[in-house]
Length: 482
Length: 87
Image (cartoon, rainbow over the protein chains, first blue to last red):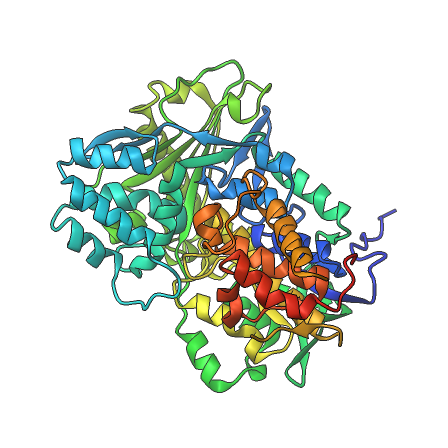
């Protein structure tokens, strides 16, 4: 006899203060904070795992692959302590060996301001005053600045013609958030300064451990977590959120905090008809950021990989070039090495290669061509890695690739974008509640609010707005005025 | 609530937000930012705590009043003076 399908909404309430759509890092962080502030929160995730891009998968042979764990800025420690738990924040450890290898230079660094200053002076021959002024300029950039300069113009100003320096400064940030030389310089400045503060960090225990800890904290704070639950519609009436439809079932709520992609939230979940035409015009101008390809390489049990670096930015391209970085003809790869220290006690290694990629290069291939191209990607990646880990083919017993199509399948993001939207998306995301009462968005937008720290902190910023909105529905809130 | 009570409330909030900092020697007329390691997220936390504990909403344009301890106290005391200390 066939079992009836499981009801993933069994026991769900008929109404909530907030429904959070999607359990990416921003969604989870906002759900947790709102619950701690006393609101009744439902967190709906379409996938069976929580975490969004903060995810992992397991394969036969005891392999655990992390998608995006390496790495994040030091600020994440504080964010985890304040909005999650002390125990979680205590597991953050530094990745001390960041490596570059390309036709222009080969450099090891701890990826912080002191070491970068040293390398820029000694290796690249840049004057101390220029370096100091550059660091001051990027440190003082903030979100409220007028957007005038691109990152290319910023580099041209301080390091004219020095494409080797540009590459040194840019390649890791492209890996971290998909930004390019043609994006606003403030997006570069904010993210770069965050890293330069103290270096690059990761989470000891692996992504699975982190998400498990976060799930327990969400439950402790009373969040109603529902996996396998697809939010199909946000109901709006009279410019005000009324509720959502999840797996065909209507649930009332006073507010929605969508951690779904910004454009999906507006165009599909809510519907353009609920917004001002001028706003929709601006929405149409929002560009999605690019997607990624990854190759996951699991090392055989008992095999050892010597420490060749934690993060390795490798490239055979002559210079840093956005088009080349996105090209299907891969020349640049970022290798993340996961040594046994990441999961103490397991004594296992895995290596993940990441490259930025375009959805359209992968979306329309025949099934056989897609398979072949994925296979080629795996093989050329192993070839490239052999330079750093000689005999890698004899050490691995699991190799698997993901493409922009894979990212789309698991995150439901349009075009499989792995870094949200370009800069203009941030304003749209921030202005959503001005269009519809109770509709909020937090997630990877505007480059700044991308990556681990950006996503988590944006979750906090938007949870604050949501809390304000919910409390204003009660008469007791006193608004101060000076 | 007295001025001293309000000052203590701010100190309690700061102690939660920045547990590694020495807040006992804070000078009331120097910017908090110049004395302890506070970023814009920390100021957001102060605003959230005030809303949570006292139902007080500090509009974004008034954030500048929270820059120093003296500013916090003079901004918040009129709003809190009629409140009992325990809340």
